[in-house]
Structures are given as C-alpha cells and as structure tokens.
Amino acid sequence: MSDDSTLDALRAAIESYVDPYLHQTLREAAALKELSFSEGGYRVRIGVGYPVGGYQEQLASALKAHVAAAGLSSPFEVQVQSLIRAHAVQRPLQPIGQIRNIVAVASGKGGVGKSTVAANLALAWAQQGARVGVLDADIYGPSQPLMLGLSGEKPFSPDGKHIEPLKRHGVEAMSIGFLADSDQPMVWRGPMVTQALSQLLSQTRWGELDYLVIDMPPGTGDIQLTLAQRVPVAGAVIVTTPQDIALTDASKGLKMFEKVSVPVLGIVENMSVHVCSQCGHIEHIFGEGGGARMAAQHGVRLLGELPLDVHIREEADGGQPTVIAAPGSPRAKAYIEMARHTAGALAVRPLDHSSAFPRIVVEKK
Image 1 (cartoon, rainbow, N blue to C red):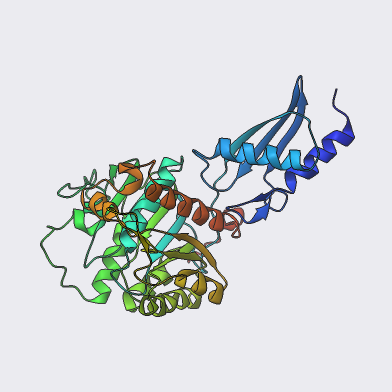
Image 2: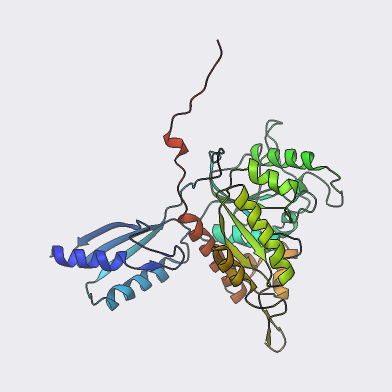
C-alpha cells in the first residue's frame, strides 16, 4: 500500500523537474494533474501547454530519471497530455473565437528565410498533434502556396461571403496567392493591403485551431504596424540570420512589436551553420552566435538555430517542407525543437480571460 510520506516525496520530486521547453518547474507550470496509487505502483498524469506528439516517451523517461536521482525507487507510470489554451493578446483586442492563439512570424528584412521557418513551424506543430492554420500575410510576395504544394489551387466559397481554407499536410491555409494568378503583381497601396489581410483573416472559415501562424511581410513599415495593431496576436517570433545587418533590422522588428504590446516569444536564427554535403565541413557563413546575442540583449529566448542546407530549399520549392519531406533528418529535428521551444514560450504567457467577463452592449432606444 501507499503511504503519505512516499506520496509527498514523489510529488515533490516530480514537481521539481524543470521542463526544457517551458523553462519552469512542473510545480510552477501547475503541470502535475494527477498522482495516485494503484496496484503495482503510482500513476502520474502530466499536462503541459504545448504539443507533445512524439515527446511523451522522452519526457516520461526524463521524469523517471529525475525522480531516481532524488533517491526514490517507487515505480510509477507517466501519462503526458497536451493542454493548449488561449493566451492574452494586445489590448483592446480579443482572441478570435475559434482560434486559440495567433503567432506572427516576422523579420526586419527579406531574404532571411522567414516563410520557410513559418511553414515548418506550422507543420511541426501539426505533426505533434496540434490543430494548425497558416495565413500568408505577404500580399506582394506570397510564398506559402508554393511551399505547401498548393500552387494553382483555388479556394471555395459556399455562400459568396466566406472562404473555405485549403488544406495540405494537416494544416489549413489561406493566401492572396490562392486568389490571384502567380505571375500577377499586386500593385496596391498600404490601406488596400491592410483591408485585404483583414478580410483573409476574418472571412476565412477557419476550423477550431490551437495555432494560426501568420507569415508576416518583411520589414517594419505601415503594413506591419497596422497588422500588429489590428490582429489579436498572442506572440511573435523574430527570424534573423547571424549576419550583423540582418540582426540590426531584426531588432527593429522586435521593437515594433514591443511598441504595440505584442509579446515577442523569441528569436530564431536561420542559416546558422552550413554543413557541406560533399565533405561534411562545418562553416558559419553568415557569422556565429548573433541570434543568441540578440536574444540576450532584448531579454527573450533563443528558440532555435536552424541550418543552411540545400535540401531545405529544394524541399520547400517542391511543396514538401523539411518536416514533411525528411521528418527523421537532423535538419527536420532542428525545426521540431524550434517549434517546441516556441510553443513552450507561449505556454507560460498569461492566459486569456476575456471570455470570463460579460460583454456589455449599449443600445439606443
């Protein structure tokens, strides 16, 4: 039989475990949902606020090793589940009903691989069990139709007012590229672009989503600022390369989100290291450690350091991004780790409590 002292010791040991993606103890994360004794041992149920597909066994093993290191030998079974909730957005906006969290993927300049990161982030979350959508907000240069293998496909409108998102690789997707010819330039001014993006977000019939990833336009101009003010964003991810000129522009993008009270979840350093496909030589073509320095300077997390690999480009161009085309490869694992760190950074943000308060409407009689 179980005794209270053993149960208390086991609880204390489990709750002292520091989750590598939350950067919190399980006590701080309130992640221990059940600890009970049954014939033959203890039953432990852990609930964390990020997708855990493919990670349950690893977390269970790490937790058992942690408990054993604390000097406890009581056998226990670990069940790990994902509990993704809606998180607070910038005031006075509120989360969109069926979309729990909108995550903006942005960069201060073009050419740093932002769209590739956004596509693989969304696909990695979907692979890990989350319900995910992608909104391509780059009106002038939409990339997601090509990357998701949806080029040439057109969405369907059941009522002439709303659009059904296209689906591929387990994610829902919407882009201006679905509504216009691929070789047609969008010669629009800022207000038209902003209106188009608002319609793509609000008039798309999104399903119940844990995450909607928005592939933001590059830069920090009027379009980006307006989007940050109008779209309820739970967190932003800044993509950069280690190169100083990219870091300078990325810092501007980070500060833009800070000005409009959108929390920055962290920095993704893309093209961090190149491994020669012929000889295996490792080279930091664009510099080394720039993303880590930027993260430390601004007090945010370094979410991942992604490789510069010709296969990543080939896979994205072929409509099969890396986490789909080569899920067991080292380059795919880098994206998967980045996705877990990003979801973990969001999971520790304040929750949305707007639904707990009544909505007051003043009507004139």
